[in-house]
Image 1 (cartoon, rainbow, N blue to C red):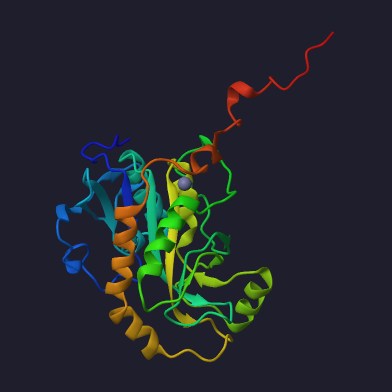
Image 2 (cartoon, protein in one colour):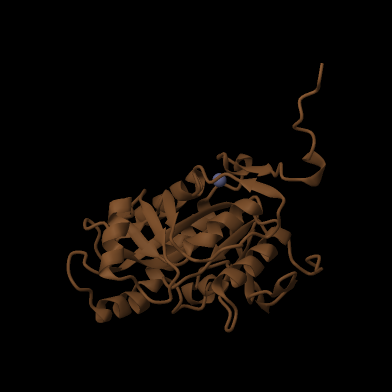
Length: 289
Ligand SMILES: [Zn+2]
């Protein structure tokens, strides 16, 4: 089994999605002092070769190292859940403690419009991805699944951007994709209390908890979900895809620079050692007498 040889020790990861897909990051932002230290970094994992990472440093004091992938680490010919496992196995070996992800989403809540930014607080997993754990070692408690400390950093950075409305809560409903949802599905999701719909927050949120990392995501509304407000236009989605990528990425990089590296949250305590171990069989018997 691979042991993570050659994987750098890095505190931060940025998982790119469709919101920044049209950019080569970090280079395209031209940020002073940001240094790319490695490209096309593929590591062996117990599940197969990893997605290609890029490693860069941010001009903080001291400099912060960040591992990043494009489009959630998806790989041709590999299922999305499987690719996520390989991605998070590497992040675990790298000792990553904070993970920020992004994506474009559809709006289920009719108060939302394209270009709104949502930093959700919870999720519903309607995807079909199962068995997306790295090991049998932990009980993962999904109370407060999106790290409050990371969310606060993302919201603060987003509120500095002049063009977007920012929502600092909400429920992200995860579907399997790749297709979008039907109108009847969206009606059900709205009754369930979902605000936005996308395809990536799960299993990443589980895998982050499993490796002991905080996780939060920032999402750009790119279309109305089916049956919400009015039929959405592909041109609007396409314009956002290309034109909003840069301002959206700048928000994320602001957050990566500013977020606290120390733990101001309970995320780490929501991962417990599993009780389902062979040595515990027989220990539940009450002592006689
Ligand atoms: Zn946290």
